[in-house]
Length: 251
Image (tube, rainbow, N blue to C red; front, top):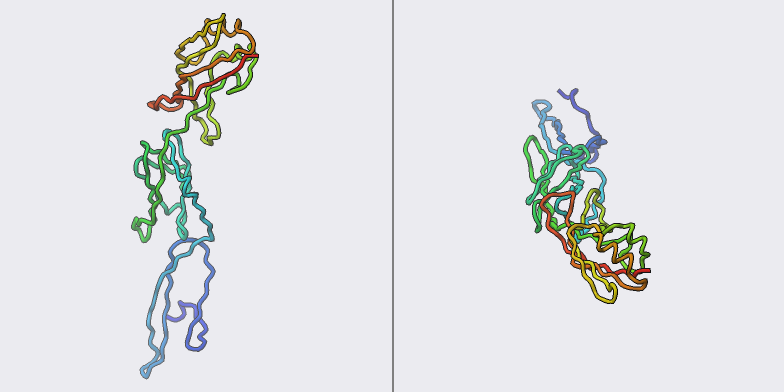
């Protein structure tokens, strides 16, 4: 019986046992305590468990815990002491899917603005156990900025404006790929032949009338594009977004 166990050295009535771990998770250990009695040596079994966790550092930017609507929000999850494959995640106000479960990589897709809670579970002895949760704010993707020929303000040459052919919407400083906006309407205002004229347009392109005005407007005159409305083209059912006016001076 004793031959099936490793023996440990006993010093001052204490047995010291050490073992190098090779994987994360809950590990079981145990043994036998041998005691000499008048009737011979008796053995008393004992056991326990311990958690093996990898060295890790977690830094959570509390004010940046944000999910955006209608985009794939990448999330990497972990629970110290458990392999990523043994962890599952769920979220309120949306759904999560694993993209690489072995590395704890998921995509979160919230349903509506407000809040969402991501909850992590680990499998312990075959039982799904809640390990903790984190709350996220859910926001709309920020609106883009309007441009004509790459210019959002300042001076622009007539030919550059004519070559642009219309108003473009550009999303700045937003790190999600594939998010695109399109201008769906705007108003074009300038002074033409001594009078202030305004053209209201559906779509993003310049009309023939606007091209004529640009081509025949004096250098130094300002052109104002206002009432600009944009909508995302990469996701269905998103709200129309108002954009700030665009003011350019013709060179």
